[in-house]
Image (cartoon, rainbow, N blue to C red; front, top):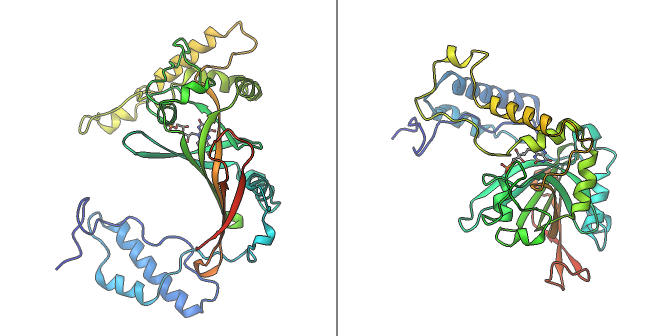
Length: 332
Ligand SMILES: Cc1cc2nc3c(=O)[nH]c(=O)nc-3n(C[C@H](O)[C@H](O)[C@H](O)COP(=O)(O)O)c2cc1C
């Protein structure tokens, strides 16, 4: 029997990365660490040298006999219920978000938004910057108009707006949501403080006034960009084996689709040349993720993390204000 078989679809596909990260545990002795590092270095060399092989069984044996340590979470004291906001996960999020140990330059507002298509259930996720936290939830801004991206998943196929804003439809009309999948999840990672926050809930559009207000804070170039981009539309593609040779691709004039975007930018600059305040596109604006559950995760040594989750109880109507939060500790 061989473990050397490779290529996709095989039982042991070729590894490109194996156990990356901080392999030094907090209490490692010097010799152990040396052995682990040397085994890992061999493995890395082997992987980068070869196009086809998986690590040899000898190397695997070497690694297993000196277990590599993935990143250890060590900086936080225990997280207990006494440190959590007793009634409101949004306030708890605010506390963590304001933690002075997190530099603003690390963009703690960065999060992942996950959405899913109906009826297939196919999931997609992308990074976003959240822009507002209010008493109802987290607000993010985007282009929801294309048939290709998250807009289609959330607003559904019946909701049509075109990138030039000339086709009717406005994301701020709640009816726009009727055919989509309103369930979404947001995840924040603040690795410097070894914390994660996971939010699951239902999406609702913010009011047009709220979107307008944020739109006006954007610089003119970004406003033009929002009008110009049909977000997530395919602008160029190459079928297998039809790519021109590298020298042709590397030519400064070779158009791999960017020119269409630049032409659209020029078009929009001309369209709004005499307009002081560029209007909010109907396909662009804010949505709020209104939470059903919010989990606060704090890393602890040996993967024995502290996890607390707030779950909405007592009121299934999402628009209702009179609900409470149950708090649960989750097993790590
Ligand atoms: C750090 C970071 C922040 C981003 N912030 C936003 C954002 O606030 N709004 C947005 O529409 N796209 C943002 N993007 C781009 C999205 O990840 C994504 O490419 C885009 O929204 C298209 O997603 P879709 O194809 O699912 O519609 C950001 C990307 C990164 C890497």
